[in-house]
Image 1: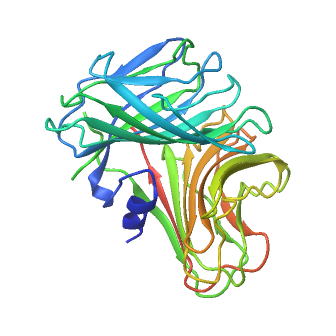
Image 2: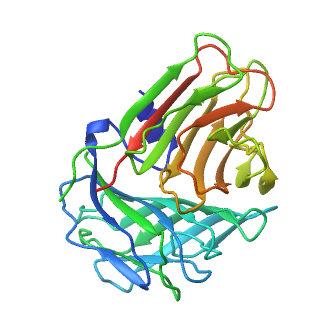
Length: 172
Length: 165
């Protein structure tokens, strides 16, 4: 029952505890991008849980299957006194090299070849009074191909020591 | 290759009596992330806040995106000892408050700890919060407190562990 609550209200689509499996982990450091490759097609959904450090303030981005086009997104976020929204494709805002930003991204129906691929992400970074943000992101990749690779880029910055990305598969 | 099933229940509590706080202690360090799910009721309308490792000082801060049903806004707390899970989402006297807290890389000892929170109250509002705990210590105790009053009988709290490959 509680897992069902989690499925409804969390960013995660985790259901029964035997349906959520770890696929791979990356700890990028000193690189501008890295990828999860050869992602198995045996799950219904994917989830990426990340803790991010970058060498400079940035909006780190992601892409699928090495493709550089077809992406759109929306960004609803709060900073300190207002709520904002814009059209933007990224997965987080990392305002500082000193504080971790974290995110949880769901990639839904990633092997379905009959529809475009969508993501949803909960993300945030708090710096105790400095530039901070908590955000909801939506993502669209206008491509029907099954996703077998996810690439995360620093968008002008490098990933730094302490970064940790974990990819999970959720059975359906 | 997948490393096998994870998202494992660690502990669960259903209150048999009203409590001013709920603790998860001696948390194993064997997972990568923790997820805490709570579905609660208050003795009076109150607001839950988080305490980690028993730290009562002002080493916490938050940034919250919040909606009340009429207004969307953002608020933040700095150098606080009472980092709230939400702003508009209150723990009311109905069974309508729920929250999911994600503690990522909670056991590493090199970075500050950041918690992502989604909190909802059908009575008062909804929101998302990012919470910073300025300590590099591994988290082994999670305490959910209140600004006033108690958690009512029947309130539930469950802690899960997620292990990455």
